[in-house]
Length: 466
Image (cartoon, rainbow, N blue to C red):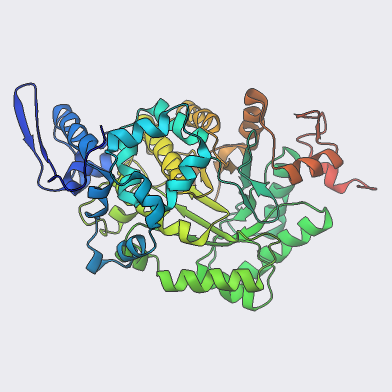
C-alpha cells in the first residue's frame, strides 16, 4: 500500500524463516530481476529464487519518491543521471511520489486507469521507477500494461494509432549494392511492409555510400509516392555530413545506451544528439515533427563495461529516459541481437522484449521491437514468432520486415515480410493510415486485407500506375 516518503527505507525482509538484507536500492533492483545471463555475468543476479522473491518483496514496498533519490549511476558521474533529475516534471511526479512500487503497479493495471492518465504521469517518472514496476509484473501484466498506452507520432506517416501495426522494411545488402537494396524494397512494399521506415544498415561506413543509398531509396519513394520514411543506420555524425551534402533524410538514427560512459563508447553525448536533432528539424525532409530513430537493447552498457554494477533492465530503462528527450518517431529494442551472453535463450529474450516494450511506452516513447535471435542463442523460429504475437497483442508500434526473416548482412533471424502480413490477418490489424491508402491505390489492400496482387514486386514495373 502507499507509504510515506519520510519513512526510512526498509531493505531487509524475512522469507521462509530466513532473513534477506540488501545493501542498496541498486542491489534490490538487480536481484529482483527475472533471470538473465547478462546479470549473472555481471555478478549482480540473485543467487537463488528465494533471494529473488525477497528482493521483489523489498522492492514492492519502496516508494517512487525513494527511488528518485537513488539513481543507479551517481549524479556526479553521469550526464544522463543529471538529465533525468533536472528534466523531471515535478507536477507529474507529485501525483505518484508517495505510491509504493506495488501500489503503482496496481494503479497501472487497474481497469479504470486509462492510457491517457498513464502518459500524464510519465514525465514525472525516472528510469529507476519504470524499471522497478516492470520487475514486479508477469509477462501478461507487461502485455496488459503496454496495450493501454498509445504513443502516437508523425513523420511522413503516423504510427501508434489503435488497431494498427507498422514495420521497418530492412533491405540490407552485404555489399551495399543499390539494385539489391531496391529489390528488397520492392518485395517488402508489395507485402505491405515499410510504413514505419525503409531503413538500411550500411556495410560500409562512408558519407558517399550513405548519400547514394539515401538518394536511391528516396527516389523510389518519390516515384511511387510511398508515404513512409527513409533512413540509413550509419553513425549519426556520418548521417549529419550526408545531410549537409544535400542527401534527403527523413529520420536521423543513432544507437543509445543508459550511461554517459556507455554512450561515449558509441561516440555520442547528449550535446551531440541535441545537435543532430536540431539539424534534422532544420534540414531534413520529414513532414512531421518526430524526426529521430534510436536503437538499443538489454546488455548494451554491460558489453561496454559501463553498467556501474546495475542490472540490464534498469540500464535499458535509462536508455528510454534518454531517448524521450527527443520525442523520437521510432525507438527499437533489438532484443535478441546482442547474443546469449546477455539473454541466453528464448524465454529470456521473450521476457526482455516484453519488458522493453512496456518500459518504452511507460517512458512515453514510440516503441518497437526487433523480435530476433542470433544463431548461437538457445532459441528458434517458434520462440521468435511467439514473441512477435505477444508484442502485437501488446500494441507494439512496429516490428522489423526482412526477406524470409534472415538478414544476409547482419546474420541474424527476425520478422519476415510474411510474418507481418500474417500478424495483421491474425489480429485484425492495419498499416499506418497514409500507407494503407497508398496500398489501396496500388491494388495491394482492400477491405482490410491483402489482395491477390500482394507479394508481387513486379507491380512496380507496370505501366499506368496510379
